[in-house]
Every structure is written in C-alpha cells, then in structure tokens.
Length: 327
Image: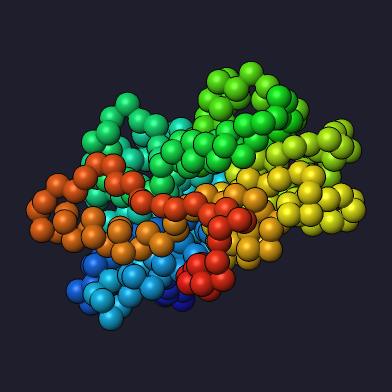
C-alpha cells in the first residue's frame, strides 16, 4: 500500500511540474504568428507618460499583427531589469525600453544581444560603452529643449540686470532632467545676472511639484522665473502659488517655464499661468513600429532618431492649438 501511495505522490508532483512548464513556455512560440514586443515602461507618473503608453498600446495591436507585453516599472530600474530578463526568457521578438535612468544597462542588454533580440530605446537615452547593445533610439533632444526655453528667457528678460531663478528638476539621472538642466546651466553661465536661487527635484509628478514649490516659497519670496522640467510639476507649483496667494503668470510676479506641452499644460499656457512651454512629443508608438519594420526588412535604422518639436508662449498660443493636442 505504501508503494502505491508513494507512486501516486510522484505522479502528482510530475504532473504539477509539467503544468508549471506550460505556463513558462516562450511567448513568441505561442503568439499565433503575431510579432511579440516586450515593452518596459518607466511608470505612469505623468500625463506625458500615460500618453506614451497609450500610443504604444494603440500601435501594437493584434489587428496589426502584434502582441504587446507591457511591464510598468513604477520608477524602479531593478523592476525594468527584471522585466527585460523576463522578455528574454519568453523569447519575445523585440524589446522596447523606456529607461528610468541612463546608467547600468549593459549587463542585461548584453543578455538580450546574446539571445538575438533587438532592443529599441525610447524616450530617455542610455549610456553604454557598447552602442551595438541597442538597435536604435527614438525620442526628444532634451538639450535642445532646454536651449529653446533659455532662448525665450534671454529675449523676455533682456532688460533685467538680475534674474532670480528657482529650478525644479525631474528624476535625477534621467535624460530629460540632464538635457533640460544642461540647457539652463549654459544660459546661467553666459548671462552674468542670472542666479539660481534654489534647485530640487520634483520627480516629474504633480504632488511632488507642489511640495517642492512650497519649500521654495518658504525660503525665497522673490523669484522671477520658475524653470520647471515638466508640466505635471508645473501644475503642482501653480497650486502652491495659488494657496500662497502670490501673483504669477499674466497676473504679474513669477513666470513659469515648463516642458512637455501636454493638453493640461497648454490649457495653463492659454490661461497665462505658464509663460512658456516647450513641447516633448510622447506619441512614439508609430516611430517604434517603423524601426521594427526596418529591422524585419533587413535594413539598418538610424541609430538616433530625434523628434521635431514646437514651443508655445502665453502671448501667442491659440485655442485651436490647445484643442488639437492629442495628449
């Protein structure tokens, strides 16, 4: 009797093990002929990021021949690295990475290269000693965005001997933060009267933006310009300014320079609350698909693909431009 019981237990264990193996079968081998794309997204911290994810979802659909596996990293690089390793294990056809930060990707990208899986970097850039670890990058020229904002500041405040600036950065180490910060710093370096009074990170979120702005105002009441590295943080800053009953924008006082030009940000620009807003287009889904089509056709896509972008001032923006915004 004991022998039969032991045999039955072994059979159950083997059966369970086999069932687990079925669940771990490679996605690319069970996709009914679809092209499997693994997408590691930074998170959903802003209107820009949510629009970026939506663009990917709308592009890589079953009707168009794709299966999209989306992993939200919630701002954690370790979660993105784990997601990439899961994609490699599942043998996806392509990996798309929107990296939370620039550093620390070489080991996992080498694993993808060894597995023969092309990697496309989207939005933020990475720093690597081996450019062959990714096929192409598509996104914004963040340094140019910063320069566009500084050009406007130089023209707008050319009569001021001293310009007092509060600088709210995004996630430290991200490409957007690095480029937009470099743009401002170059402006400060060439304009003797420009002074950065205070600098802190608002993590690209509205909640943190309000918190940081409250801290800025507790230390400095006389600020000429808030250089705010995205719209969500600018919305938080506007809330803090209103609660402090301080004038800003078209009402006089502090002027806000922002980035992304989301619909919510452009509404505030039209209202005169944001003085200048530099576009950062998040609709990268079709651009990523174009890269994949080139790779599938055996062609070599451009290593770097910058997106053309505009800028909007409170003095010049129209209702039609705001209503035309898709994100």
